Image 1 (spheres, rainbow, N blue to C red):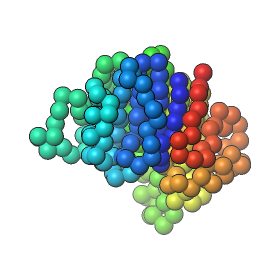
Image 2 (image 1 turned 30 degrees about the vertical axis):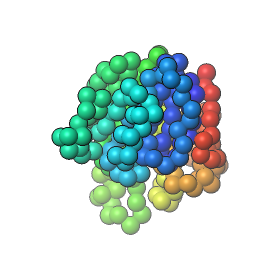
Image 3 (image 1 turned 60 degrees about the horizontal axis):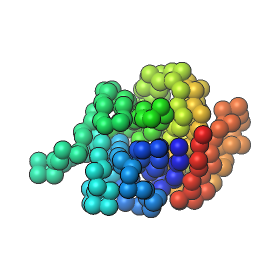
Image 4 (image 1 turned 120 degrees about the vertical axis):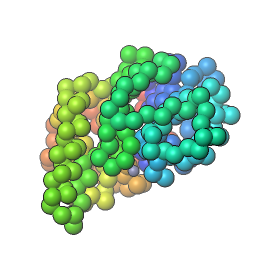
Length: 231
Ligand SMILES: [Zn+2]
């Protein structure tokens, strides 16, 4: 499986026959994809750093592409097409070669568990432990409980690759969501995302003492277009 970091929370995961493009919104370049691959765009919610309608125009470049969109992404009736699949949280879907399980985001929309060609991939969307300094205590406690409840649904699940937020805006809590995810799951390769171009935070987490022992298979991101071939 080949992984490419496109931008922000957008990654491309290329399998033998299928290519998954997560949370693409038009920024950063999609890597070259051979014509015989089936392309899927998966967009976790409507926020402009996770989705823009311009991506529908890419179907000319990738004929036969399927679009899996969280239901909070609004479409006018005339924009609805048979290749657009609307999904909601905590459901299961089968779309061509993909088996999909959705989780409920702690912000908006869904997180994804995708199984294809024997691989299991997790993409968080905005499902994260959003602990904000300055928020009131009850709000932050509620957030912690909701995040844990959702990730606990994945307890002891194996993932070949997982994409999880590491958001520097959360100050000292920036790594909490990733830490909890890694403690609960059996993840072979973990990638940070949603770090707003702050590549320093991707390096900093490796020195974070609370993360010691959890980042054996962590991939530091250094630039857009970076690629990894996972076996
Ligand atoms: Zn976001």
